[in-house]
Length: 70
Image (tube, rainbow, N blue to C red; front, top):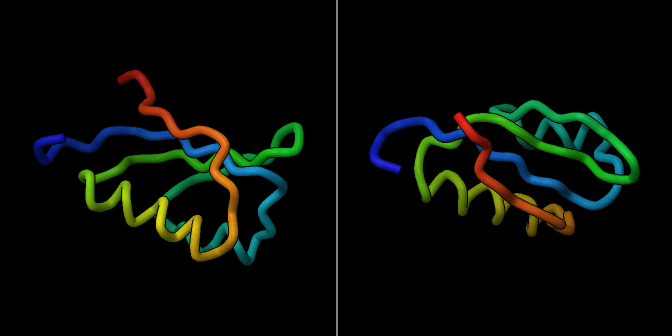
């Protein structure tokens, strides 16, 4: 990822409450059809793994994660 911000989308199962969404202040979110989509810039691989670890620690089930086109 070489120091350039890359945008990612992380889909989690269920509707995130505003309280849970605040655990991801660097990401936007939208709720749709039984899922919450978190999206935004990811600084590097460590940041990405940190986001996934945060999902896991909050008991969120990640359904899909993908890099968004530029």
